[in-house]
Length: 176
Image (cartoon, rainbow, N blue to C red; front, side, top):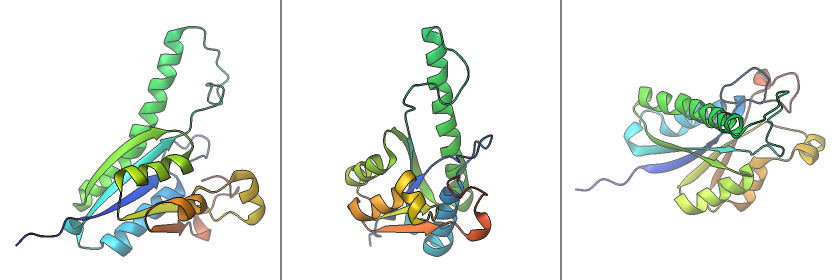
């Protein structure tokens, strides 16, 4: 008797925006932990997690640095560092999955997160998309925008949005 293929859950993850904190964002970790606790539980063989990290290209290419880049080698180094940060982020989630015995895949794309996530959902066709939410108020949403709301409206699969808890929120709610 053949068993059913595992349920494929895409989890959109991003880095923390808090300066000096090169780790997974509070919302990403919360969405991942919630998925493990509430969906996967002890049925690790029944699920496969798909981690997507979207790197947003910096408009001027200088990534908030005060340095001046004067040679092609400088820019190659910058691109290498950006990719390394993305890989470090995905490594956190992949390592946690392997510790728990949950199958997973992870990849990086570049672009506008809300658009890229929806395009990747269309391409990969997961059974479910899980995204973290910072829980911004209406005023902040106007200026910052929310990836989770866009995905809930436009992704071609069911979407679960996980809000971070009050006690996890940094001083500035836009930070994550």
